[in-house]
Length: 60
Length: 151
Image (tube, rainbow over all chains, first blue to last red):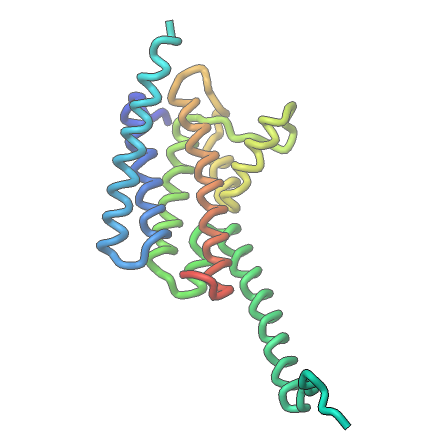
């Protein structure tokens, strides 16, 4: 079985699963969990894309 | 005859000594139970929280670790073994082993072996390692909760 995922899709899937787990483990109330997970997901994506662009000049 | 400058500490009454002993024994007992909970949480993702009736967290850990393991194995990520050649392979093995029983579940799914010649295989390796590390974090959280430190 091969999952035909692009780099971005893989990263988003990874970030989503980890963020939901972090939110559930790190906070008690459902609203706080959701907020924490959303922030975590957003930061995963932003930092991941930023690091990708930082590495871009060295990739060629 | 002069009074002593400082009041001498009085020795504990027998009842207080018994209370102290009981408290110490309870603490030791609690530590042992917490250790069992932590080990259970490592062996089966989410079990540490389920034993403490933290159903939401138990389900979240089980699903998150399970999803990462299934995706990682499906992407044909590298599942390290104990026969690693270098430090990175050993570290990878320790991370993979963090997912407890799911390590062997992943092995049973990856019948064709790893394929890191494509990017998806490389991502799969990270998914598998992250599953292990996340499960270790969850087991530690369950241990701390059982000790009464946080929940």
